[in-house]
Length: 283
Image (cartoon, rainbow, N blue to C red):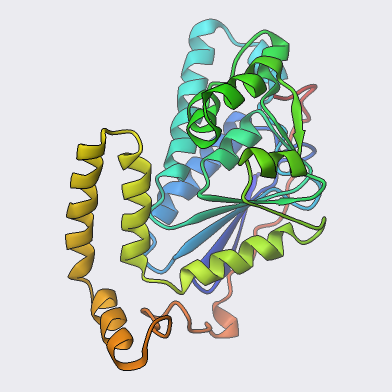
């Protein structure tokens, strides 16, 4: 039964995890998310993606009951696949916005870290509690968290396994925006729609330059930036934007068809929710 629900609203696609009761990352959910990411990566008409877990929670982590039954080699393969899946989400060419409600723990937080922007409800709780089970994060937690908030703060969260409320998450830089409970998805969709109206090639190039340049030396990063700038300069969006600036001033350009409403019949229907085996515990 499907564990991912997809909703298409013009150029914005919402990917909702639907693996009750906790949206635990079992093999089926992981495989569906991977397939979804690969499909989105090749979708020319998708300009922004929103990740959501529902109003009750985002995702509480991996299926610990399933992991406990695995041997070291099996766990290694399972972890490699989950790490690769989250990387596929992180490498999507369009902006990815996470709408966080309730718990975003363990693998749930690692998926949120793969997004470009995180909107949290004021009742959201984030954390990497793996150390409390005698293990460690294995799907990007030690790497993306460190790059996001710095080594010292990352070590504190990783080594204590403590949970962080939304207000502290905002102060730490774990999330970018905190909104009242019940409005996280709307806020994330609003931001995604705003980005979807922008120049797709420039947004993709900015994302690539920031993500890959941050892991390189300054000279390599500047070289990458220069190459991407040159490529973007030759796009139709650049021609449109520059001409609009010269004729009408800044901030008035309309790029592609991202700002156009689709006919009502073009709106995608969500897949039905399904019930999955319930794990005993999650990280």
